[in-house]
Image (cartoon, rainbow, N blue to C red):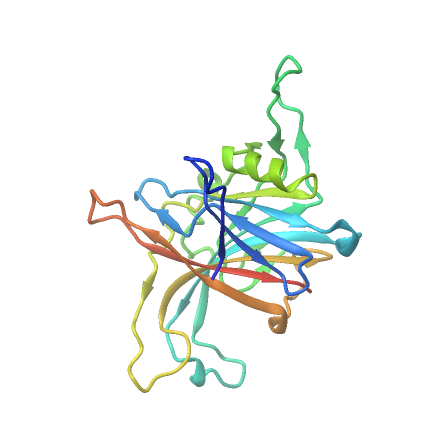
Length: 248
């Protein structure tokens, strides 16, 4: 599980989740593990990645969110066939970053993220950054749900970046309203492996490009993040998110 960090000496200290790569060169910070889906919109997934530039050198750091549907046991995955379907992918380059200087009189100017996440509805395989199938959810609202413009830093990101220093870089994801709810079927007493259902994962990795194949042996989980319905509504969707960090 992620670690909590916060200033317990302050009355309004903020707790964040932290996960580091095995060599400690890359660390991801998230504001929370519980996210609310109000049907019309979802809580954004925001955080900061702390990078060691000497380790990354001329490579890049990416963060993505992946929703997947598992409909069969892992022990039945044979001959390259898996009972798993990727439903949704949002990806962004965290490092090197791109900012504008904002608008102001020189005092208290706001910085905007110029490389926001790109939303992609996947059909299992991407070609030239586009989905292979037009029947997947999210395609009909792709332009509406994509964060195409500059995204201002949130208060949490500003505080984390001030605390962590110049090598901390932000990321921001906004899931589409039609993203599937997280549902997990509890396995039987004699069943092993991951349970069937829909889950989400957040992954940070170092690569030359976002198309590089991730190495499974360098990927590890940090525990689930849960998207919960609002207490006042029983019809809202619930999502879960698994926190990953990997290096390739």
